[in-house]
Length: 229
Image (tube, rainbow, N blue to C red; front, side):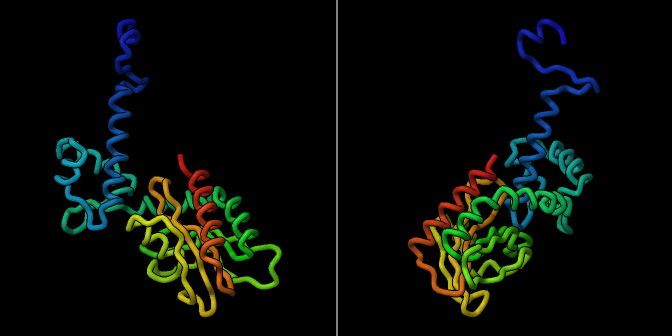
């Protein structure tokens, strides 16, 4: 790098001859495109993507080519951009890290509420129990397996996620929707980019919405703080 460039803080060339600033800008655009596609359930056209990114269609085609090569983006039969299977591979790699970050808050919640605590994430349009902690001091509690799937429209965990989509962050209570005789309270985990999740408890007896709801909200806030960048 020459002295003038050093003093002015201008873009420098890397060892492979590319411009560092241009490379960072391309990476930023690629990641923004990936987020746009992820937030568009019906997919995006190249023109829509170009307009939202404020760049030309040719630049979008180049980004799509690079992302498609890694399986992150694909084009459907109508030419619309959709997420590729490579995103699922990364998500599965990230799940153990999410579970590890949530475990301290889940343990506290399970002990406080005397109920089985769980972190549920959205995968393939369903709720999936990513981490589960059972209380240590109760004689009876619900057995809730990690990996259990359920529709978002059933159970407190899924309903809390749907409520968050509608702008509500409060706790949600349900009874017998996933398992007869089981009661649940859950709240969404907010503030973690790219993550739709909830934290909650499930028990064999009715749960006090006020006290347990406060505990669930505190756990959701703790998990958000632990997972947020």
